[in-house]
Amino acid sequence: MATTRTAHTVWNGNLTEGSGVVTFDSSGIGDYPVSWPARSEQPGGKTSPEELIAAAHSSCFSMALSNGLNSAGTPPTKLTTQADVTFQPGTGITGIHLTVQGEVPGLDEAGFASAAEEAAKNCPVSQALKGTTITHEAKLA
Image 1 (cartoon, one colour):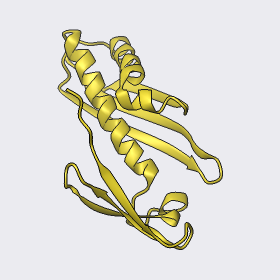
Image 2: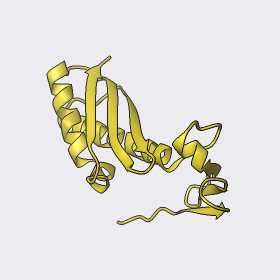
Image 3: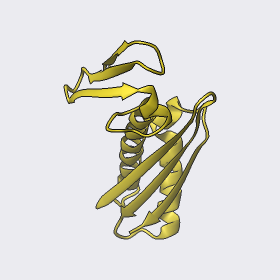
């Protein structure tokens, strides 16, 4: 069954001096302020599209890796994934780097790296972001 998730943003003012609020409608987890300085300089307690992409990618990748490991008979005990999304003003998103550390009983480093490679290719968010360079590194805890 297909699912649709919804969020919306209300933006006030121009790009550099304005600001907005992102609301997660589907989950109801809250409203988060967003601004150009938070995106192009320091966050200052606000989020950015790139941070939201990082959250989506790290969670999707973790799910894909967990599923792949479980399907191979080596379910993980724990996976910790960080997604770093690089934004260059005037250019856009220039890359995404995923770093995952896992606790996977019965699996060696090479097997974990291979599973992470497959997850990076098959994660639906990775598929949606094919227009950018995505790299990853994986290691067991």
